[in-house]
Amino acid sequence: MTSTLDFIQFVLAPQMITGLSLGVAVVLVALGLTIIFGLLDVINMAHGEFYAIGAYAALALGAVGINFWLLLLIVPLLMIPLGYLTERGLIQRVFNKPDRHVTTLLLTFGLALVLEDVLKVAFGPNTQRPSTPIPGAIEMFGIMMPNYRLFLILFGIAIIAAVIVIVNRTALGAMVRAAAFDRNMAASLGVPVTKVYAGTFAFGVALAGLAGVLLAPVFSVFPTMGRDFIFMAFTVVIVGGMGSIIGTVVAGLLLAQVQVLSSLVVSPVWSDPIVFSIMVLVLVFRPQGLFGRLGHA
Amino acid sequence: MTLRIDNLHVHYGLSHVIQGITLEAKPGEVVGIFGRNGVGKTTLMKTVAGWVQPSDGAIALDGQPFVGLTPDQICRHGVGFVPEDRRIFPGLTVEENLKLGLMQRNQRSRAGDRDAVARIYERFPRLAERRLQTGTTLSGGEQQMLAMARVMIGEPRLVLIDEPTEGLAPMIVAEIFAIIREMKANGIIVVLVEQNIAGALAVSDRFYAIERGHVVLTGDAGVQQAHDDLMRAISV
Image (cartoon, rainbow over all chains, first blue to last red; front, side, top):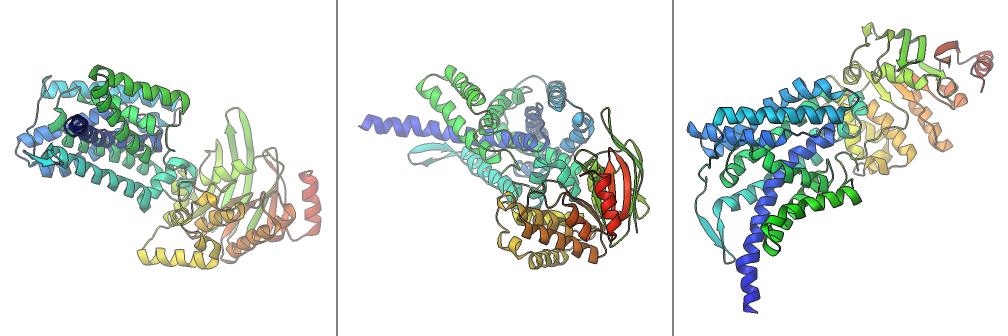
């Protein structure tokens, strides 16, 4: 009996809390991905690199003495013009071609490769680890919890909640949902769809950048960091339902638990295959994902 | 202020859907467009709204040319579009659907928006009752009213209405035609495509009969002889 309790307190609970912080992190990256897919029908292969750019921007600006808390505001703001220009300058050029899915997929994949190499040239291939902005740890329910992880969970949940409110409860969000469902009808009611598209893409990119700032102290910073993290984010988006915000949140939190618990119960080498098998099963048996798409009731 | 469509041609790939249509409508005038299925009526409406680009010809409202503009630009020049199948957004509530129509206005203020919404709810109490429901949970007739209300809220100068009474009960049909009469009374130009020819002629001032992308007959909706000619022209 005591050994069961010990197992729960010292092994299972810490692992589940690690899973929660991983889940929040994945959701932060996946949210932008799912919003961009839900509205524009574009699979943004470069999303992971925007996440990496956010992390490197935080590193570079931190090095010149800008405070971490300020970076949480500045970096997303800097990502907005980058996202806006990417949409208007690249994606919009091929958007109305007949095979949009293939062209935008290849275009953003090419962009991802370029951005990754730019980061490599500019910052070198080595891994850098920013110091944690909130050192120390506190004891909660008998578990030692690093302060920064706790902050990450709480702040991440606040950001996720804010995104849900913006998309589902504001006039701006109504425009995005309307344009996601029926572009022509939204336009005929006066919704400036090209601006909404670019603005939403920029919003998604800014979210990826914010995730980069937040996660750099936990997962370190290296040129291919986007590529590594994006597979998990794609899995979450597919399982949750491409373009579903709630689905992304639910799938992100669940799959992160699956990952940490399977590495505990089975083996760490099996956690990735298990998570990706879930994606495959969902694609085979419920290709629309767990939840419905943005703008579709 | 006039709607002028001049020698309009539209192609879908190889098929020449609209083959030189010329049409005119004045403020406070309801113009009925009649013809069998597939003669290009819906394409004509979509082309004026900017959903489809013409291959030749001109469209202008009040001398402002529309060809080459995007649907949102055309909308902001005072054109409201109530397309076939209503196109209510399923992910939006009745009120969100309605408020989207406010985007058509060029000058907006918080108070102006509030008044406009209040006026619409006063005119359509059923929509007010259901304002927090998802748009597509409304009945077909209510959805049609919502589609018309969300255009009216933007105070357009021209309204294009495609098959508004299709599949609706007679009582609702009468209500839809009453709304069209109100639009006319407010000095709006209404272009109406409708299969219910008798009902549509009763609210129309003039009509155009279309056959294979051409105007084959125009006439005064108030003249009985014109009705008979229309029926023959579109052979229904």
